[in-house]
Image (cartoon, rainbow, N blue to C red; front, side, top):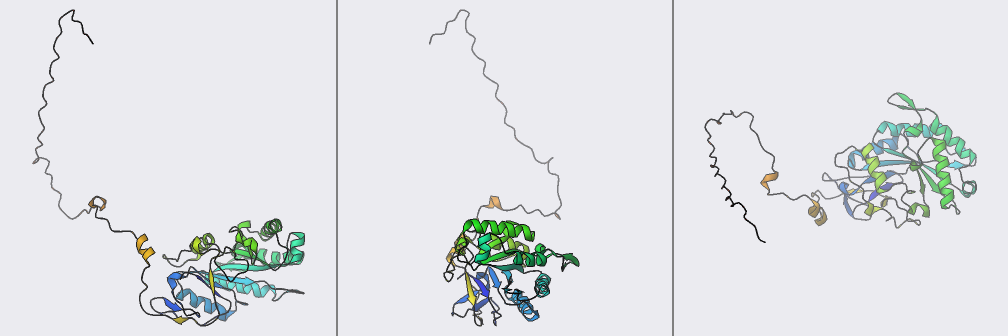
Length: 313
């Protein structure tokens, strides 16, 4: 079974030396079956950062994505801006983790087809202030965040409003509109709106991957989150809510499909590379080889025709 793993809180994880592990449902998987490991923690303090760092070693062929949810209370954000900056800085320091920011959308945002002025003010300050250090250079958060997911908590969001909110948010936060997605909404059935499609996972894997054998996300995994009411086009994931146990120590066998796709050895010696022994002594044998050139027969002379001869057809 191939699927992403989603952790909403740290869970104990054990993986056998051959990469096998057993998820809470009892099914055995291999770390070659996991294109993406997603973290949706309520905070990214030192303990959770250490946990993610450990997971990077347990799933070295997977893309790792940390999702930070901005929780807006009646008097502003749940945590002050410095806390969110510290979390993002810690994730930047890990170097091999993609970073998503989740921003809620309510009916009030849909009505004006943009995020509220309060949200814009907070996000603008958070994203555009050079408050991070990347290679010891002051850097705004907009330069290190890979995606902003607008999480639909409304009952009225429609395509036109979503399109306008995306453009306005991208402009305000100095991002491209492709970096703004719609989450938890029927609109995410459009792959251009979804947060984590196969194409997005491949692009981010090329940036943050640590292995030459990264697990490749395929389109077959898109739109298969049956537990989601909106059934968006994000890659299929399994939410891990309990301990993951180590699996068997047997080496994972290739499936029939993988064997069929594997390149078959060729017996065509014409395709083999020529092996040249540079240490061998080269001898000039041109004088010893005599080529037999066949004698050329003289051309037959055409018969002369008598004067006044007439051809008849």
